[in-house]
Length: 224
Image 1 (tube, rainbow, N blue to C red):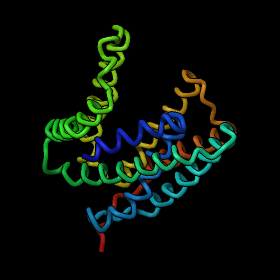
Image 2 (cartoon, rainbow, N blue to C red):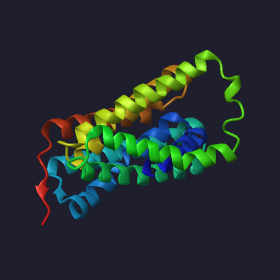
Image 3 (tube, rainbow, N blue to C red):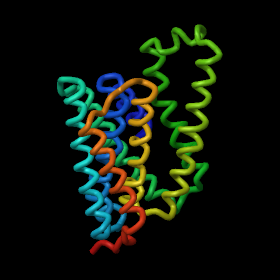
């Protein structure tokens, strides 16, 4: 269920505000929510360095949103709101993945996750006419669909679920921030989207936060 809502809200956000900003907001804010909820839900209390890196990541996210305003000339509020929805849903996905990691095999978790997402999204795709042009897709399009299904979905999430077995939820959510940094770079190289000076600085700050959290972050203390 989390995957169905996350993927749909994220794709709408990309359409409204661009791939770079949508991805950065939807994946940079979940560490904040995870840090707040990990203690009461999972019994994981992040260390001081991890929390410091978290706040630095927040600063980087704010700079990236300001960059979007700078380059677009306006605050694309609808896209940012959809990105925030995706961030909230992804937080639930992160917490439940960590909770189930010690109880469910990796392949089982991945299968149940995406099978449920497919069932939830199937009626929406059908009634919105999403299958209308399937027969017109060229072989290049099918190769891209297969690539998206195998590499950034199947393989990536198998690695994610496997990593969640040994990585605290807050630290894992901070490390995942590396994904939008690569998206921002590819969006600039391939799609011609610009981050601007503030966005580049924000991306650098996020990178530093991830490195510090991964290298020097203390193991979580039991919540009291």
